[in-house]
Length: 301
Image (cartoon, rainbow, N blue to C red):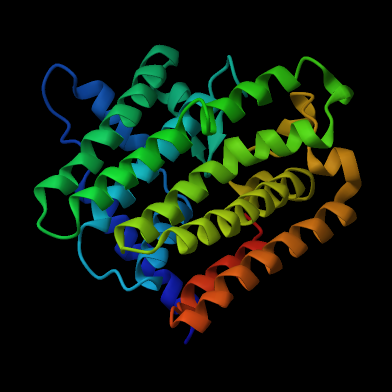
């Protein structure tokens, strides 16, 4: 398998699915729909919907029922970035090499666009109930996971701890930081992979294993993000570097240095891969999924 070619094909497929579910820009609410679509269409790795689809395939899923959930999780992820970029939060003017939503549409419309994407995500996922594929109980369980991991016990909880951490500076502990990373970043990766497993009909033990692996993938992904914020450039990363230092954020890098942070990132990634490979003994294998996770270790943007 040529991973780069396969990744390009999977990315195109994922983009097509996401765009199919975006709202049509018309009527009195047209502007917020334009802002929502602008935010999603800025691009990105589409990591979460891709991890969802590949975990679905890992457990033998082959129906279109996964598609509205893929679009939904990218909408949730995008809304979090739109709000994250606001002046009241990180005050970032660029995302993925383009101006952020609040810069283009103003603060108020960016807030509404984020709200719109979150609500529309669940409208989109609920469309799965109108599809003949998969079991209704699986769809309901997948929705429950998506809601919890995106909410106060997941991503929003992590965002809250992240904002409050800015006020205590170097008093942030590793335990506090891991809570932030687990909830702010890993939670949506867990949601993606667990949803894929649930919709494919995986058993409880298998879903729990996927949740553990996704936790480590999420933490490793965030550590790499922290490293790139120190070592990369605006041209390469597509967003301002040094924003963590500017916002006085404690990160894995500021706590442990680049070398130790990189070592821990590699160890977590390797262990996550080991967990997923253990499923091969049960007859479940997805070579592309493993290579996708490995590629996160060395990503430069």
